[in-house]
Structure formats: structure tokens, C-alpha cells
Image (cartoon, rainbow, N blue to C red; front, side, top):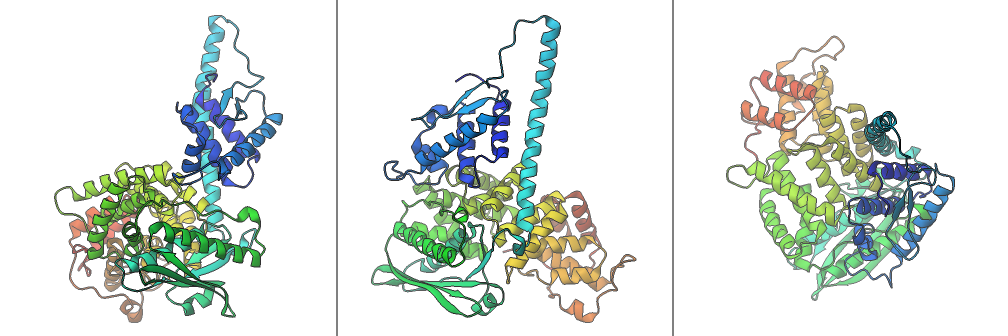
Length: 577
């Protein structure tokens, strides 16, 4: 391999991606990025078909190139794409080639680049100055290109689905029911449905939601998916039904014997997911280019381990202290027993982030918050290495980058863009990214647009979806807007929801003066609509909590000012679960 400057090679990669020769499938771009990253980092000798299959295409450790040709096929297509690009490319660009019979790329100078002849010192100085400028300018151009690509992803995700270049189907997924006497079957059933919903959302032409019942689903969805997982005679059975609206007609149903192992349940999940996607795709003539294979998941665990992992879905929906202790213990045991279980590392990261971000269910002892952040960082790092495209992994990575002690906004934007690129119509992901952009980076228009999209897609959005709009309202002078914004928050939910409800009620009760364009103070009916919370919270603790949230300076100042003005303070935030 001829030594080349990394910046020049990355410039060539950017030009290849921009030329469109890689096609619409993201897998070719991921493959090129992986090959170049390994080569430039000095690990080119590690580029093998098995490593590519596992780290790029999410195959499991049992990948057999003799039975699965994905690596050979995609390497061949990438080789052809590179040939098409360099047929018309700038001759000064470094040439990236993949020799036939090999997966490892070779890098060499372009045909228009020649070595500099001996030159006197003045010319050498000019060359060195030009090189210094390139070293500065090329990374800047690359960063500008990356930011532009990220902004396009955010804008596309916020666009109403009616404006998409293809029809986006809305599929409501009800929590799956559990039946039978098997330890952890409730977690298995709930997680079974949650993971099918997640994998459906990985298709750009499907938007998933989680309404509270079928009646609510009928108001907004095109289809309803419901199911149950049963334990009968020492084996699992699964029954699923897909119903179309508005006619309420069953268009697909299945009743399958699953078995008694984690691998059997995961295989059933892949099977039913494929059947649903093919049925919907055929009915609506979806282009094959929009069909995506579901991610491969770790399958070497047993049923209790899988039940433990699935428990994270129920916990995040209702984070209660008893389930937290059990989940923390079993997830720690799972990652110790199966250190390559990327999804389990991601679940553990989310659990630790929940402790660190909201002080919820913290372990005892000094430095508990710092310890939770450290554990979250270690678990997230493992999840990114082992399950880099998993939804839970990207949620954890984005949250850690934005709110962790080593705040990294560039990393947050990269993880957020990747999340919405892979799951463009997934309401919790839209809300997470939108809230981060708005409250933590001050990009209110972009962030609130993503939150608004999440609220359009999710008919029964939980309180956390409404936090960013409530924060924006509290920064303003319109008391009526404040009253409306906090009405959807959960006064018994996370600390930030409880604090915002308390501040809004204190502000409305005190009749805070409004600006000249603000609406009149809300009447008794509007004020009474806010929950009444007994007791008072500790002002110093509330101020410390707000400062620890890493909000934008303007938002932090507004919240601290309202905490100081709240007298009496009408809500409890200190006594957390």
C-alpha cells in the first residue's frame, strides 16, 4: 500500500459518496466507510469476510460465507461502483481499489499526481504552506459536508409523511399479551411486540405507534398489529393478527409453535416480521429498494437471559424502583455471561443513563451519579462495538454524548442522524433527537419540528414527548401557552416533568405578569386543570438539577429565574423514586 495522507483518502471517500455511484442502499456506503477506516487505522490485515459480515452487515458469529453470499456480493458491487466513479473522476484524487479475490482495499495516488521534483527552498516553503492550508481546509470541508448530510436527515424526518416520495403506512402495535405460568413471560411478551415494532420502523415506508387500545389505533393508523405469547406444555406459542382500517378486516394471522429457547423466539420474530413486511409490501406495491432485512441479534443466550433483556422495554415504559433493582441485577449477570451480547450492553447503558440523567433509582453510596455515568459510558462503548445499528444502542449513545460529563455535540449529532436514518418514522427516536436539538443545542425550530412529527405519529404520546414544547413555553411570557404545554406532562413522571408542572402552577397561581403580546392570565378553569401536588421541593436541589441538565444558557437562565420566583413552591421533586 502506497502511503497517502488520510485527509486525501477521506476526500476521495466523500467524493465517491456524493457522486451517487453507491446507489440508494446504505449498506454499500457503510461497507466503504468500514474498509477505509480499518485500512487507515492500521488494521487492514484484519479485514476478513467474517469480520465484515459481523461488523457491517450485523450477521452473528456463526456466519458461514459458503451459505450466505452477502459479503461477496456487496464487495463485488462496491468494486463496480468504484470503477464507475474513477472512470470520470478527478485524476488528482487518490485511487481506492479492491483487487479481485480480496476484501482489503488498496490505496494509491491518482494518475494525475506525480512526485515533486527537487526544488529550491522558496518553492518548498510555498508547497509546505499549501499543504498546511489543505490540512486545515480539507477537514473543515469534510465537517461541512457531514453537517449538511445530517441536516438533510433531520429535515426529512420532520417532514409530514404525506409529503414523502412514497406512501408511508401507519402501523399501530398494541402490547402483546402474556399467558401461562413461566417466569418472565410478561417481559418476553412485551419485548417480543416491542422488537417487532422496532424492526418494522426500520423500513422507511412504515411508521409505528403504540396506542393504548384498538379504538385509538383506528383513529389514525392504517393497520393494527396485536398478538399474544403463550406458555403451554413446556413450550412457547405465538399468535399474531394484522388488521386493516377503516374496514377492521384481518389481512394476516399466524399461530406458531415457538419452542423453549431464546434462539427459537428470535427466529420466530424474524419469520413473522418477514411475513408482515412482505404482505404489506405486496398490498401497497412497495419498491424492493425500500425493503430492509431486519438486524441480526445475538442468539447464544438462554430464555431467562432473553427475558431479562426484554424487561428493559417494560421498565422504560414505566420506570418503577422494584423492577429497576431486578433488572439491574440480571442485566449485569447477562453481560458477564455473554460479553458479546450487544443488545444487553445497550439495555444496561439505558438503565444506567436513566439513573444518571434523572437521579431515578440511584444506587446508594457516595458518588452515585458519577458512578452511574461511568457505567453508562462503558456499557455504551460495548454496545457501539457489538450492536452499532441497534435502536437501543443509538438511543444510549445519543443521550450519553449530549448529557454526559464529556459532552460531545458532534457525536450527538452523528448518532442522532444515524438513528433517524435507520428509523426515520419511529416516534420515540424523533422525540429524543428533537428534544436534544431544541433544549440542549438551542436549535428550537429543527428540534420542535421533530417533536411535532413524533406527536403526529404517536396518538398516545407519553409525557416525555411534551417536555421540549413545555420548556419552550416556559421561556415565553404567554401564560395560556404555558398552561396548555404542561397539561400533557406526567406530574408523577420524571423529575423534569414534575419540576415543569410545579413551576407552571406556581407561575399561574401567582398571576405572573405577561408581556404586551401575551394572552391574559388563564382563568380558574385553566389553572384548575393543572395537577395539585402536595408539599414543597428544595430550591437548592432544583437549581442544581437544572444546572446539571446541560441546557442552553438561555433556557437554564429562564428556569433558574422561575425557580427563584416560585413562592410558595407547590410541588415535590426532591423525594424521587
